[in-house]
Length: 105
Image (cartoon, rainbow, N blue to C red; front, side, top):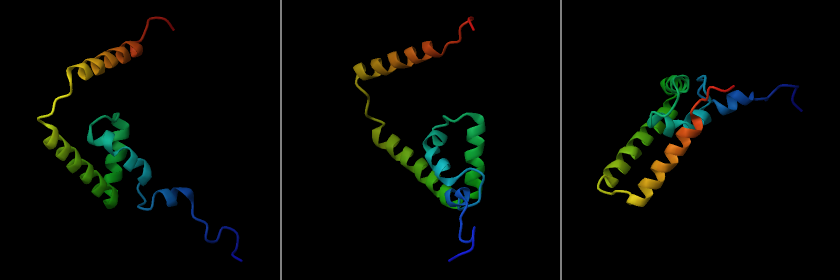
């Protein structure tokens, strides 16, 4: 039988084997947003700091960049149907209207 605490791995260590501040699983989960420049400044900085410290996650990021370029190259001649583009534009407009701050409150 082992002594109390012996062989115990802290949850942060298990989720972050590279030792960088942001856990690997969270960094990898945010890579698409990072590659697409969709993260807020603080989140972007956290992912960048993690990638600077973690070679396996940096390789994942590089794969995402290559995948995005491949999809772009393969689909550059494709165009979404006009009806789909219109529906997407309408949804974006609705979302923007819902986020507009009001003078109330």
